[in-house]
Length: 184
Image (cartoon, rainbow, N blue to C red):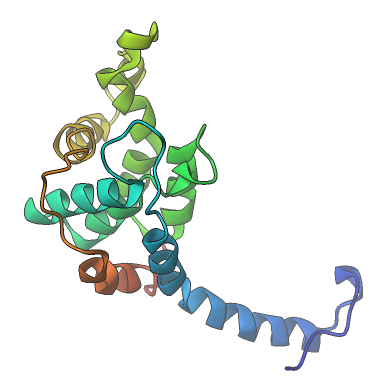
């Protein structure tokens, strides 16, 4: 395979960067495939949960699909906790950053803030502020984020729920991650 000639970026030529751009475009086009592969590996979980992170994601996305959410929102719901593996202390922001080029401002905001909104269900048990989300009251996507958490996220830890398999979401993931990025 042909490679760039430089060892420092400042020494790169136009030809080097055209070559790299060609490879980068091809790599970007396969993002959906890499995401599906990563998600399929989420068969482990944090200790204490009755289901895996993958199953939680599948349950959440299945609920969104059953509620006739847009493909974009179903995919965002599937990926909303993808940051748990590598960024457990800011998983919402991680997932939102991954999705940002491909989803609307609304979907991005919901995913970015869902972690704080989820605190409503548990923070008070741990001495925290369950009303952390109230600082966003009045925001145009506040209610949408409350609904996301209530209807799809917080209730998707059920070992008896029949979720769709990951392969059923694969076409949607590929569709969302192959479309032209939003300019936000």
